[in-house]
Image 1 (cartoon, one colour):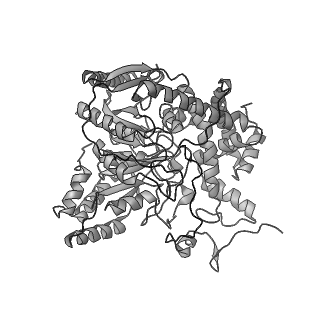
Image 2: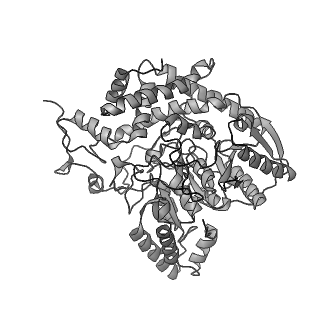
Image 3: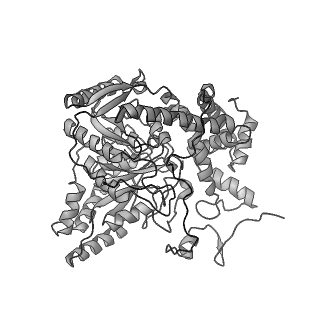
Length: 97
Length: 477
């Protein structure tokens, strides 16, 4: 199950929104296969009667009052990092025809 | 390498508060040292302007009789994945080149409230993916003990900076060993606290169920003071836990009757014999002072690395999905539509290791593979936690090497990612289990490279871990 094909790599890259060039595809095919083969050693471990661990703090339902709080951020400080701004809005590329 | 030591940070602060030392002189000294040791490439950027104006403000306040806190005027260096005003925050990645943080990390605010001054940002593996700092998109940091070797990683710049005494302390992050392993390679003290003890708000996320923040220092007592300041609940990080009511100040510790378990699996044939020898010597010293040493069996601990390299990339793929080229970071300029903009911004913006981890993470989380990989790894994680809990019934502390070798050569593992991952083999378990762990220098190998000893304690026993560290520091002197 660990051996990835070229098509697998292309599918992963597409799911992950990463454009790869031709030379990268073969490198990742081999490297990812090797890494997956290594982590597959877990398949042989008996984990019957055990539940998965999602987090280790033991905290449950951490919540706060649903109140607006001012943390001192200015909209312009945030917009300063935006690649394309138009009328104080984030401009993105066309999504639909 | 000539180490010019700084005084303990509490002493520096009290001298600044009493007017005996000036904050501006400490900041200028640190900035001069950074300049002087540029050849090691430990630093990505300096915060000269901000640091100098903060120092002048602190000196003025003290002149007016206002105490400036526990770290008044003490300079420090933050790994470049901490959001700090006054410089770019890049996480050593091309995709974040030029990013100006609009807010600061909670713990930077906490340190500033106590008068500390951030003077520079340290180099790292991009997005903290790596064990050698060779994955920095900018340049490779050199080991202060041998310029042809790596400083370890991912907090390699922070560890090298402290080893070179560029500042009294540095901050690092540890997701799978990224504080402990570079601390060990550079001969300094590195502490990964209990998961949740230190807020991660304003620190660039890698693996959210594993990420911890901690100090890298040249002495144990400094780390205790820093942990006391940076720990505790934060409403901006809902994974934070209460701090120990007794605090983290380091004082004398009686070794008599303390039970220390050496992890059997960590002393295997794969570990450099010189490291094992140094560890055994330290343990026999501890025994002489009354500690009870035993061997502890953690049957599943060898699985920790495989478990980690499923869980960590899964969380990486999720955390790194925010770099989409639209709101911040690198954006491909000529995309015809949004989808192409994502593909090209991420494809060109991320470098090799980030892409590798994103794709592994995407694979192990994808439908059809989720149960076999991700859920299985989470369940093995439970098994590991159970084994550690069992071990801590018999031992107060667990010890072992930090890494199988001392600092390796630059370029030695770069062409084999799996080989590089194996550097983390003895450090990842503490992250999966969520316990505090530290690396303390205990000697040198025949190449004069530092050897570190890894110490682990049960969850929330960070104070005990610091106390044991302190007594080892005393023994080694």
